[in-house]
Amino acid sequence: GQRLVDDRKGSIVGTGGGENPRDGVGPDEETKRRRQPVDSMKVGPAWDSYFVRAKGSDDVYAPGGSVRFGLYANIKRWRDMRIVPFDKSLVKALTIESRDSGTIELVKTSDTGVNGEWRIVSPVKAPAKNEMVETMINSLAQLKAVEFEGNKSLTDEKMGFKRPPLILRAKLRDGSIKTVIVGKDKVAMKWVRNPEKPGITFTLYEYTVKPFNPGLSALKK
View 1 (tube, helix red, strand yellow):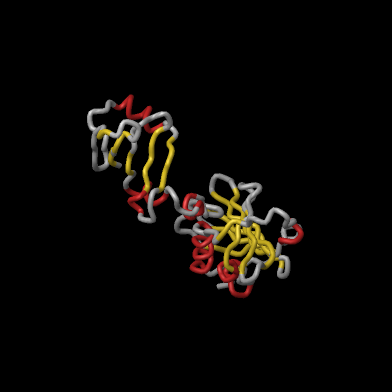
View 2: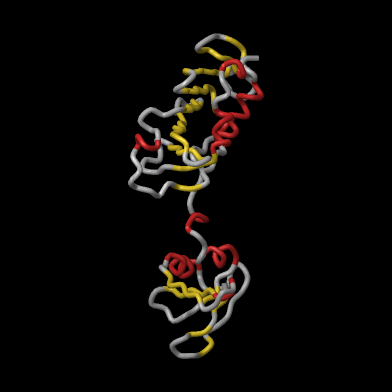
């Protein structure tokens, strides 16, 4: 950012530019400045109308880069919308628990989880369609919510988490399990939860969830 004017004294206090605007400031002092809380102000509708000042300081700065655009942005821009991020290459087993059609368990025959073949081990034993399973796992690892459910009056029963229609479990090579619980419909959307993020309910489009429950016949090679 760029240092502007000391608004109390009305005098120019110095300028700076680029990625390191405070030339001449030592690293220790710079670290202290970065950790200070700041006041922000908006004096016009344009992006260049945003200014910041450290608490207790008379120095006013015009922030640059993504900080400038994020100061008065919607809070959703700052929230992590990923539902259950993990390394897809580490998945060695996948379980699809459907309330309507039962449970399907798949395992990867290679211990390394890189070049192995996917097989269905329950409720029948059969080779699985590798490309379909890998696509499901890739989509699961990158799954992002559209919104966070903000209605605190909704109960688990209302959202379908008492008897979930669908539960997905990806088991990694270290033994950890990544889980996504899919609830009921919400007007072309689905309520979704990750047990590792208690207290948070996500919503995402219904069509995003549908490919995760293809059925046994579709998964068979």
